[in-house]
Amino acid sequence: QKEVEQDPGPLSVPEGAIVSLNCTYSNSAFQYFMWYRQYSRKGPELLMYTYSSGNKEDGRFTAQVDKSSKYISLFIRDSQPSDSATYLCAMTSDSSYKLIFGSGTRLLVRP
Amino acid sequence: DAMVIQNPRYQVTQFGKPVTLSCSQTLNHNVMYWYQQKSSQAPKLLFHYYDKDFNNEADTPDNFQSRRPNTSFCFLDIRSPGLGDAAMYLCATSEGQGNQPQHFGDGTRLSIL
Image 1 (tube, chains in turn brown, green):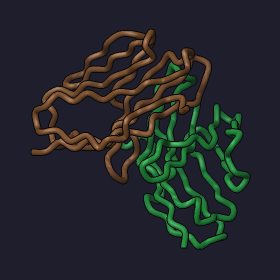
Image 2 (image 1 turned 180 degrees about the vertical axis):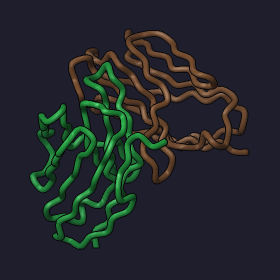
Image 3 (image 1 turned 90 degrees about the horizontal axis):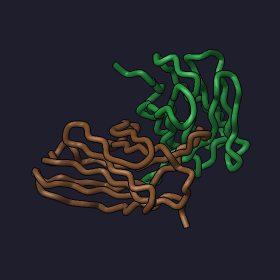
Image 4 (image 1 turned 120 degrees about the vertical axis):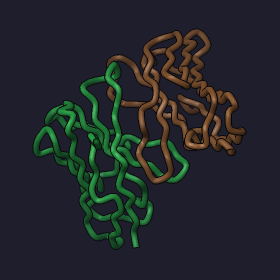
């Protein structure tokens, strides 16, 4: 079993839809949770960075962490075609340099 | 403005011919990382430097080496590339450990002939 599980998709939604992306994990030591967006042939771009449980909002993006369930989510409101990309969740513990990534969910927002 | 810069963006080399990929940063971060990412897969950490201290992942092949001559630059050397080494190589930086986020460059896509 992988440490971080993420549905690879693809997830196809119409423009304007609310998108929900999720990851589950098994290591209770993880405290820092990240979402990266990766466009084709580009590097991952940090979207959201959260510590421990709770919600964080930045514009159209909301990140949620539920440590009791070992479950994290990224919500995208009013999705745009420019949001079409692969979304990678990543996480780590306080004492580690190593990010553990999910395999990524490919999102397609149709005009 | 790009803060983690990788050159070249695309690199073609021959089977067995040594190749070097470069990364520079303007963030003055202590930590620099090299990841390998194959198609539709998660990035896989190869090694990282905390300042001048080198840390190799246990499953990184001996074929992969790295150098960090100063804070701003880091190099990935592949001594004898095989066909299985064709991938995107990503450089990242962070100020410190897990409580500091990692910032990635746009990668170098390596092809092996």
